[in-house]
Image 1 (cartoon, rainbow, N blue to C red):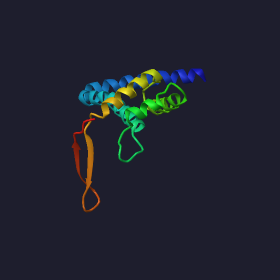
Image 2: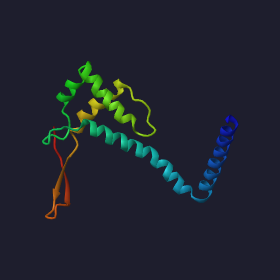
Image 3: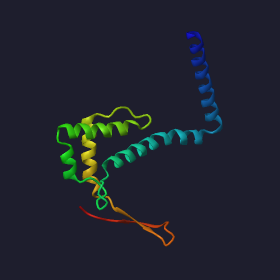
Image 4: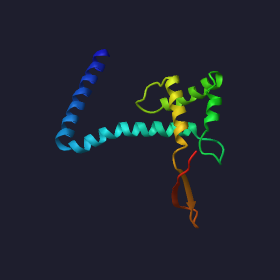
Length: 141
């Protein structure tokens, strides 16, 4: 059984090498573009998950505020639960390993501080109920 697994692994490595040669010979630009897209997609997925974790349940307020975050990052159980859930969600990003709690806490604090500087997104629906316009309005904290 071990011999068969070893043979399959060897065959797989040979096939991967041959595919890489074919890509480099016949589609170098497309294969580079595909390889470059991977990290960009990872970052996008991580940021999306991070923003989901930091949004507010209050319909009048888009994001958690700094005082709300400070309440959660109290050094006790709330912080452990909050960061643990965030770590779990962010770790589901393909190709990303574990994230330290202290590093995540710093990232969250900086994000909440800076997110208030982003323009607010306003959506308008047309007469047919479909999205007809998106506007960014600059707001200052």
